[in-house]
Image (cartoon, rainbow, N blue to C red):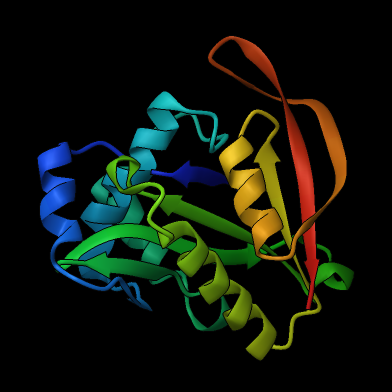
Length: 184
C-alpha cells in the first residue's frame, strides 16, 4: 500500500472555506476526477515517500489508471465542498493466483485537508468494499517513517506483520516498508 498522511498542497484559506461547506462524502471516482487525483498523487510522488513512484502521472496516464479500475478495484473519492479532497483504491496484492483473496489498499488525502478524518473515511470505504467483494484480507505497505499512515491503519484494525528492509530507494536514501494487514 502506498498511503499518504492525511494531507496535498493548497492554501489554508481554501481549507477553511471547504471546512465550512459541510460533510465529507464518498463516491466512486470518475474520469472527470482525474485531474484532482493526479494533483494529489503527484504531490506525493514529487515530495514524499508515501509512494514509491518516482515520475508524476500525466493527466492521460491518470485517466487510463481510472479507466482500468472497476468493481472491487474501483477508486473512490472523498468530496468536500464539491472538490475532491482525497482518493483510495484496492489493488491485487500479488500476481500469482493463490494471492487473489488478498488485496492492497492505497489512500491519499490532499495535504491541506489532513487531520479531518478524511483518510479514515476513505480507508473504511475500501475496507468495506473489500469485505463485500469477498476478499479475505487487506494489506498495506507503508514507508517506515509514515507514522500518520501507520496510525491510520492501526485505528482501522490493521496490525503490523513485518518490515521489508531497504527495498525502496527514493530521494537518494534507502527506504524500509512496514507491512500491515487487516483480516476481514
